[in-house]
Length: 321
Image (cartoon, rainbow, N blue to C red; front, side, top):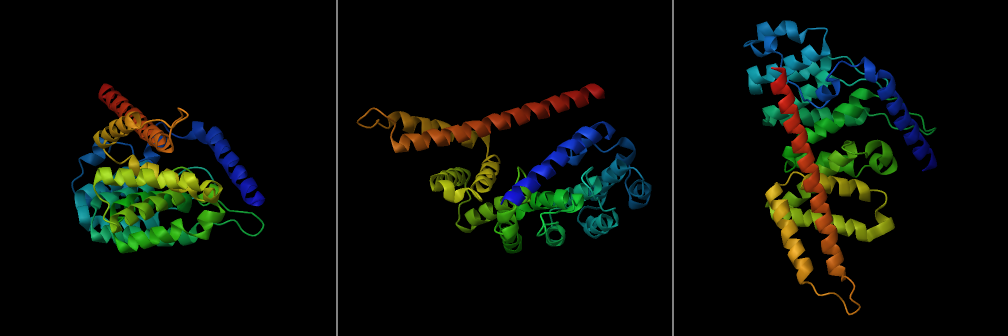
């Protein structure tokens, strides 16, 4: 445990150093590209066939190849799956701790947008392959960073979330979520929006679907109870508790504002109507309701901030045109 903690601190420190040292070397907008936030340049946008797109796909510029991948998906649609997989295999492998495999990230997201059975199978094959390649700490605590598997894998799982009801997707996510790697090296595999968290999102969503919990309000109540149960376990939930809680919160965040807001009102009414105990203190039920209200309000606030950021980005784009 001590070696794992030390290793994780070292890796985190190195990543922070990378941001500081290389931050000025990245082109403007680079970290938005990492998230898939970019517009296709006009010269690529006007391309309507594969032959015209080829020079852009072969460009030395990683962003140009990235934009060409997105355009390939738009032009070819479902027919682009095989070509996208081949393109990913031809892209260079990232080693070390700096930079991101932008083109591979965009290929994964484009496969997700294609949204066919073939695209799902291709993504699942990628996930199986990457999961095997991810470096694990050896007996001496050493690890060789692999930017490809470490950065692409969580995005593959994120994209596969829409197929949580698929048996193969669910089973693969479950394998990762319950793996010894995630349990033993939680600080490596289980940070925010990491491999572990993304896998638990599919695991949890798939379980709800299997139980017939599909309607939004019912789903939200189930997730809140899930988080409450983890909290009750206390020290027993330290290993995976925070990870499961983060996964449940991420799924709650996908629910509509109207559903979450109506539940806040419902819980607040229940809180007010619940009489206090004989000592005038809050009852156990009131404390549970208060915690649930706090979780929902926090999520609604986060969603509001996200919407404000999106609106600001749109304003900046409009101003640049």
